[in-house]
Length: 110
View 1 (spheres, rainbow, N blue to C red):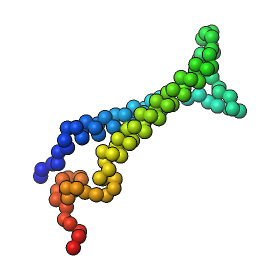
View 2 (tube, rainbow, N blue to C red):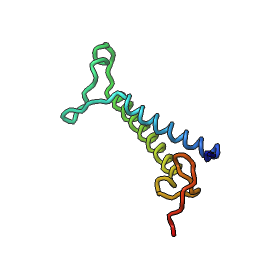
View 3 (cartoon, rainbow, N blue to C red):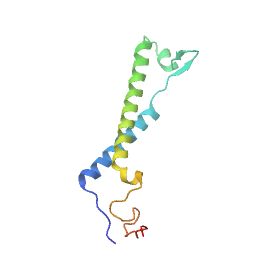
């Protein structure tokens, strides 16, 4: 059985799209989420107990930038994946090969 090979540019595009998507999701999952109660941000106790000057504007601004970066990375990765896998997602097969093992698929058109 001969396996279908992707062109290197297409392969790197898929790897890059998956990487963007994964980094965006990991950034979102690992970010310090600020809690909101009664329309007020609840700051974590660690900065307050350190005795440092607390600047809520900087904390909220950093949180917003992380959220924006995470959203942009995830969206860019998802769009790249949608373009890369557009034939699979639309149900079209250009080669007539099974996508799992590469064997020839019999035509159902009579």
